[in-house]
Length: 174
Image (cartoon, rainbow, N blue to C red; front, side, top):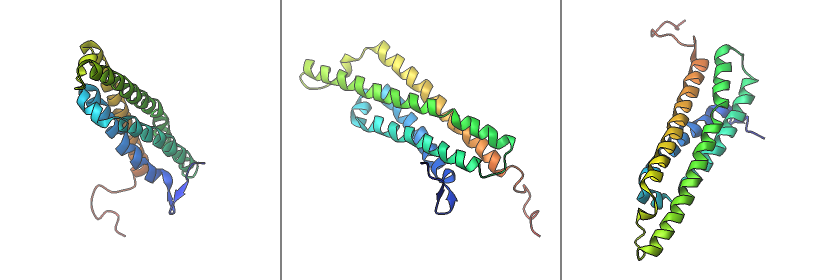
């Protein structure tokens, strides 16, 4: 059961902040870890755990959004926001899969390298073409996820604020 109200406020309005923070943070961490193996070793299991929190926050937020959608006046802006919101889950699944794969792969490569180089754990076990491919793939998914969050947020702001304020101060004083 998704939350509907939190302290009298629609849960979607609060949960959306998790998505807005965690998706770009996870995307940035993924790209940095893919590009620099020493950073990946420091992040360790925290990287896929961060992506898991991100992944879980999306269905919670969209579920709360679906509840809110049933309790407000429908218009084309709200419908567009709902459609865009539903398109974020595949991007966060991609972030999670890539973070888990990166963690697993670098963990194995680091373990193999430490057994061959006397415990120093250099990144010699990871080929340059494989690293370059993983960086490009991670960058593509990270950018796609962040762009989608932007598109969703922009459509949500338009749905919320369209024709509800005056661009000139004092126009709404009665």
